[in-house]
Image 1: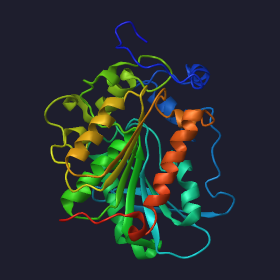
Image 2: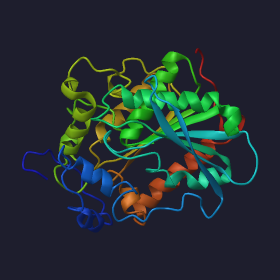
Image 3: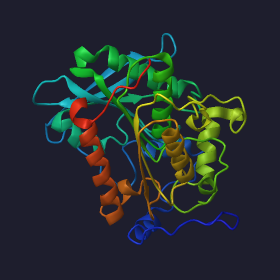
Length: 337
């Protein structure tokens, strides 16, 4: 920790060697290093072997070009479907992480492959990245991809009444912002929002947003870079949309059932917990999990650690239940548009 960083909980003992080994693998995130970091992480986190996205032929992959939020500009979506059987399947719409500045439609989708093979469709959107494409492009692109998915439900062999949105880190913030857009624009209906350690608050005033400094995981300097890339001089000010920064939303009613998890050594800890509390106070059903000793994305970089396995088991169980037919999963449609 830097000398002026607030205290943080201890990292889980099994995670310490992994975190130490990862320290220094990437250069410090900056305008000068962004292109290099994008290149190095294009296939996923360093030190993590890329997965076979077809699961040995159990999953079919296709890519489609769809209209973005700007007229005449297209983006792509990656579509993963079961190779065997017929729908209509439940759908997971995925918004990838990467601090708003890196990543692509193939990033962070490995955890969902077993659910696709078991009978679901995953649509992952390749939204445009900041700083080249600042707010509102990323969240509007995510919404455009979600609308396209719902409007092409028959073609994709999905049930338009069984679409959830999923995202981790920056993708968790974009998923939350896209869910707000879907609610306010009246389409499409989402059954769930599943947010893994979401990036929700540009103001960086919480304890956890300041407690990490150069320790091999997403820290306050990375966070400042990501939010500034997205918002520019508006970061931390009053002229910020809740769709870009869901922690700014004053109305969290009529949002879908929500899953949030985060480690207690994660820079996003406080904003994730606060968002869960505010959703619950607004009448939204929330499952919140705070994992002791876990850092940002530690279940990806240290999957064999016990805390990582617990986190993965709980997530997978939630997703299995959420992907069941609504009558079986106990999901009810919220009132209103």
